[in-house]
Amino acid sequence: MDQTPPPNLSQQLLEHISSYWISQVIGVVARLRLADLLASGPLSSEALAPQVGAHPDGLYRLMRAGVVAGLFTQVPPRTFTLTPLGACLRSEVPGSMRDMAIMQTAPGHWLPWGDLVTAVQTGRSPVRKVLGTDLWEHYQKNPEEAAHFDRAMGSFSSFVAAEVARLHNFSPYARVADVGGSQGVLLAAVLRAHPSCRGILFDLPHVIDGARAHVEAEGLGQRMELVAGSFFEPVIPTAEAYLLKHILHDWDDASSTSILRQIHRAALPGARLIVVEMVMPDGEPSRTALIDLNMFVVSDGRERTAREYEALLASTGWALERITPSPSGVSLIEARKR
Image 1: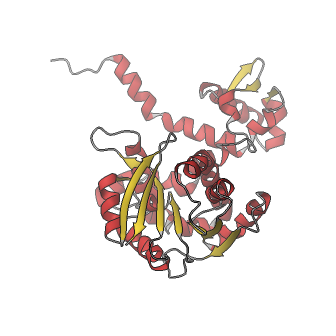
Image 2 (image 1 turned 45 degrees about the vertical axis):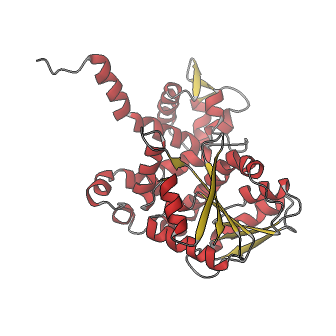
Image 3 (image 1 turned 90 degrees about the horizontal axis):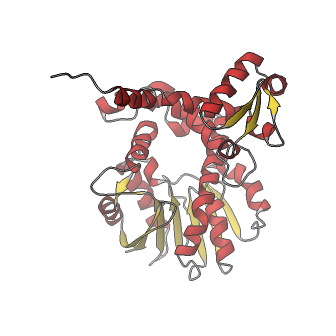
């Protein structure tokens, strides 16, 4: 029996194998701010090279590959225009993907993925092996990379913040604390939608320092208190409701248990917890399986099924009340302090 794979399947697999080329093309285009420079009209790679500190031929070859990735169109000779897809890499547009592109192709994420085999063989993230520390300590030592991470999370939050504010009624709560809330994008949306609430933004000191300007720019300085600390320590502020967006998927079950217990300790009787995460579907794997693998590789985290969230919450003093899907793909996992 002939075991030679059909040429079309081999080609399909080759495209998967080499797809990391596209990832790095997008990452470098983002780093060099090429989308910003092309926003006002076509430019040649020769004209762009001195503006971005690049070799003219090297930049031309990058941008030619960017055409293949759908970021640019080429107008001979060596002149490029920005496509709608490429425009998503502009710095100041709503929902910009520039920081996400840089974050995913920077050492904190890129190097652990290069040692995926270690994660599979050992059941543990290779991040300490390749970075010499965990991801969060790596970011503290590399503030520029950390800034891209914080902005990427803030930009992603903008996709889901309005949905969270709409899908849950926060009006009964005097204080809403966003634990690990980064720049406060989600909490700001909640406060704008529920004028009677006050907010507490809680995150690590260097994150809080970076969030102050954003909070003031939102005009919420009088309604949002900024508190620095670690959610692994008994310093979480007291509130009637807590937001926890894309935090638990960063951590294994033991660490997630610790976080939930610290919030439970701080919470007022009957307080509500709104966990915002993707929920792994039972049955046929979906794209969430790839996101789960990413969390495993870079931080020993994981995505979880509804049953796994229910068990995790129950073991830490929280009673699951409902899970509400949203159009963006995340779900609101709502629980009450027992």
